[in-house]
Image (cartoon, rainbow, N blue to C red; front, side):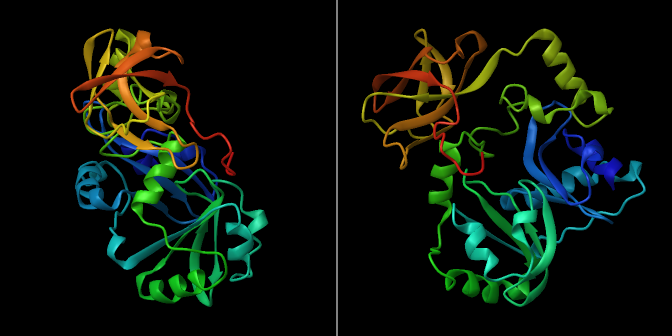
Length: 301
């Protein structure tokens, strides 16, 4: 299982200890990103967690490589619930519902325990918001009970994908379908830290080696603007007057009160402070490359 997941993802699964997780990418032979994922190493299996909308596609994609390995692959998506409790008070609130000592679960580590009377829950200190918190994986039939226990346990409110999206963008965390997709490579997306070329062969490795040798022509950057304009996904981007794709992610930062976004620009224009323009309703607005994360007070740092 370790060898198989090591082959279909870019990070080094063999370096994970039992009880540890990491972030990774799934590539195709062109070296572009089929999806991003989390990889969990348990004592007797590996769990890959992908974007829900890509689950069937990802399963078919990695299945093509399974025959090279003595491993079994099962899609447990429909049988598994995932609830994320995120925020500075998440450890204190969740601790009231479990006997597991959450202080012993480090960032990007996990354990198994009982939460709200439900046994065998995978308790993972991970999340997609920039704040401390936990993600809980467990049998789908217990979803309502765990949901009710969490939402009735104090200062906890349901948050939808729109809220989640603004928080992850403030932290400079990539979203598949926006910042990364099958037209971008990890090297272009500033995810080279997920690519362990020295671990041996993996899907997309040759393409990344070739790109690294020839030079990465564009990079994903964060930007902001002093004008009170809303930088939406899909708006045109210009660098030195020339087209440079489109805004990949954009919003009005709820925490900072300023417009923030991401775009791909030529590598020579990626230094913080570099100028670009975004086009909003036919008008070009000056913008500036900003080092991410935009929000620097996240409790997970």
